[in-house]
Image (cartoon, rainbow over all chains, first blue to last red; front, top):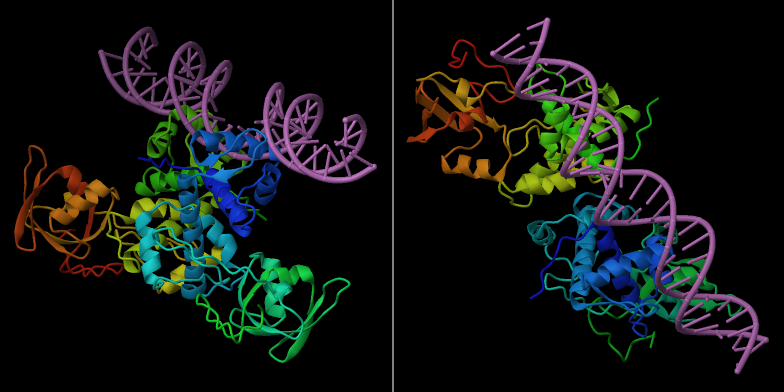
Length: 241
Length: 241
DNA sequence: TATAAAAGTTAGAGGTATCTAACAAAATAA
DNA sequence: TTATTTTGTTAGATACCTCTAACTTTTATA
């Protein structure tokens, strides 16, 4: 039987970063030291030290010079932090009138509050939400996460339409830019054209045409216009294969 | 112009403890090292080190072997933490269905969250409450604290009645005991008799008689039965001088 | 007032989380 | 396959917060 010790903020942040790296891409279920260090804005040497500690606590599988993966308890803990983070974001957005670019920073602090009752009650107060303000799925109380969307606006072909369901980047900069382009969750987007030279996209949103970079498009997650978020798409009509 | 630097959790806890010690008793507006250390469950040596640091940051006035007081910025910071603590307690109690003995522990964590907007919005959501679930006054957004009640149940003479308005001890143990005796905020209490030997009190609450210790009584704050909390008492009727 | 007790400080040490600089292993390219 | 680049590790240092043990100052008491 696994005993869950109290983890420091820092340890929790390492676990969360590992989960986010390994969830990002199905083909790559492990992370590297540099990658992890970059995600946490620390030096690789610092990450190496922490990895030893997390290994001793059996929260990560890791060998010198090898790849890093979360153990089952490590993953469970990381999912719980993500759950708390996204519930708090939803609370700030729905109950306190925060804008979607403000919630992330505060939730980074709130996600570390230790109280199972608090999390459960917050979930209840919010009526067990499925998605946070950025369209990300909130893991449920059992720690289950539905698979997230893999298509981005950058994957949509010219002349096809889609619907924005989430964003991959939660930074203030990006989110404010998204708003400026007239985008929000559930908004329809039509890809007018794609420039083959630099992958710039011309998109139509709310009747307005905008040119956006490939980097921007890669951070907008989309589904077919006829999809309902969280449900299967009607394949006969689907425009984004 | 004072620049407010980011303080660590620990530093904030020292400031809060200093405020609580110096607010407790009007006759003694300063604290000692041992007293402070005891309040924080650390050794006096540890407190001495931290005091040097807080002095460098101009948050406390302090000389070697001398008494400790908060500076104006130090006090301002401490009041802000108390404000956050009590707002969070009120939130947990009113919005999430926590009991009054559960809120303190979680608020100890939440009080350190850094976001002015969060505090302001929380205050608004709660409709600018004056008191927390323990009857303690919540400092307002300007950092003003109304003077708190000075009479305790232990000060009430035999055969006189009073009304409970707050508790001085926020520990789970004490609060559960208070409930067991049938007490809660706004409840009337009649002091039936006082034992001169050990100051045990016989009190009547809700028609039931209980014997309580002096220690217990010293942690129950009361006003005259005809007082409205936060307002002046009708002196002609006041029974607790 | 002299002495004992209480209160407070200093010195030296340990754990955590971070860094830089130097080094080692693995992956990639020539 | 060898050389180069990328990736990852170790060693040594620092800042923070804590401790114990020994010491000093202040306060209280006899």
